[in-house]
Image (cartoon, rainbow, N blue to C red):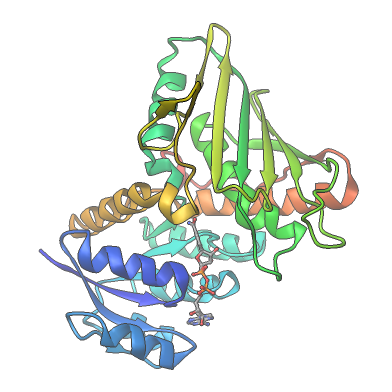
Amino acid sequence: MTIDVGVIGVGMIGQDHIRRLTHVLSGVRVAAVTDVDLDRARTVAADLPDSPTVHDSGEDLIADPRVDAVVVTSWGPTHEGYVLAAIAAGKQVFCEKPLATTEEACSRIVDAEVATGRRLVSVGFMRRYDDQYRAMKAVVTGGEIGSALVMHAAHRNPSVPDFFTSDMIINDSTVHDIDVARWMFDDEIAAVTVLKPRVSSKARDGFHDPLLVLLEMASGVIVDVEASVNAGFGYDIRGEVVCEDGTVELSEAAGAIVKGAGRFGGRVPTDWRERFVRAFDAELQAWIDAVAAGGTTGPSAWDGYAATVACETGLRALASGVREPVTMRERPDLYKES
Ligand SMILES: NC(=O)c1ccc[n+]([C@@H]2O[C@H](COP(=O)([O-])OP(=O)(O)OC[C@H]3O[C@@H](n4cnc5c(N)ncnc54)[C@H](O)[C@@H]3O)[C@@H](O)[C@H]2O)c1
């Protein structure tokens, strides 16, 4: 069975997902594309083997009866409308993070999905599919080194474009660590504090980089995330969980360790595409397989909601300089297992 997918938004990650849907994954075909920049959509479509339909709008693409399922890779503020339209059409939708940019918008999506009585939404938190994070979670949940106490994490980007802001360090970078924390410990975030270390000389005026984001889980586990976006040397993702009887940490990214002249070392990934390429492949293949089986898989609309609420709390903590409690709606029964 081949799932015909329509892709809304063919920018950086949209094109990367189209590449994997077309050339890497199985059981799927890109049948339709669109973008607010229609010339870009036509250019992308022209390079694809199955001559996908170029729709004038995301709404037209979702309504196309030949589109079985929808991938949303447009700008964050446009996600809500497309995800709601896909739910209304009864189509499975994979939405890149964020699910939506405000708690209210995420809540509307949760309400719409709950009203259908079945899961239709999957959110693109690909770290859950990364081999290293999965190995770490297996140790933490297996209990072999005792109960978790603390997690240290670092999210270092080599550089960011000029439009990047301190808020985006939380909304665009730390959001992945927020999702990892919830998933790693099967727990919700109870409070967020944001500390502002000495500012990097590479940060623009008025830009606080790095940030130290402290996530307090409901269980009492504390996750500290050092988020830097001018690290220069590469894309460096780190994680270590400290448990009562031992620790577990992410190993270095795949590749060879070279020893010579009294030193050893390896390659630092250039960017998130290189570091998480296999996680993105696994994430979308799992989603395609689930859609083919008549359902969905992966992070739910609830996970998208919880991540956005934690990010909004983080922005409040960044502005206030103090610990900010996280307040969430009650989790609907539909998501009790997610
Ligand atoms: N999971 C990850 O690690 C990851 C990595 C990168 C980006 N993302 C997410 O993917 C999304 C896209 O990011 P990007 O880096 O590809 O951005 P981008 O700017 O490169 O591409 C976005 C595309 O969406 C199009 N677009 C904007 N508004 C639209 C609308 N209303 N309808 C249709 N198309 C529209 C733009 O013209 C552009 O082509 C963002 O939500 C981002 O946070 C996730």
